Length: 189
Image (cartoon, rainbow, N blue to C red):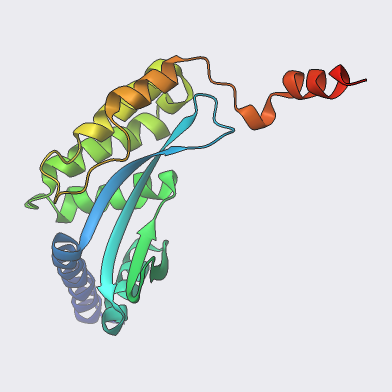
């Protein structure tokens, strides 16, 4: 391959990335869910994700995203099988692939402020493991609740104070409380 062909190939790749940035601006989002789980140390875990939504007729755009990021999965949207969702939920992939893409191709995005909070959360989890301490988890939850204050009417299931109150309590999942189960079993003997 000669130098002209290589240069043309690089331009196409860069053009496709700019094109994908436009798709993300219209059909993409970053979010940080706060999810309950009975085995989590503090009752909750923080789950950052990147999405692109597309009608099934636009699946080629989702394949482009897969090619550009080299990871992720495509699945039907829950409740609307005609809409497909490309998602990346691996914190490592978010750190290594999504954040650099946003830094290079999405700096003019109207979603930039939301992205910056998302980035803070991902970096705090990947580099500092903040989600593993009570104080760190509370800080991540607070940042997540600040991410999109002008959301399109979608509110979180729990208030920030409910989540923090639960994290601050000594959380012992009922399903794994071995001492209680053991004593209940032997109290009838």
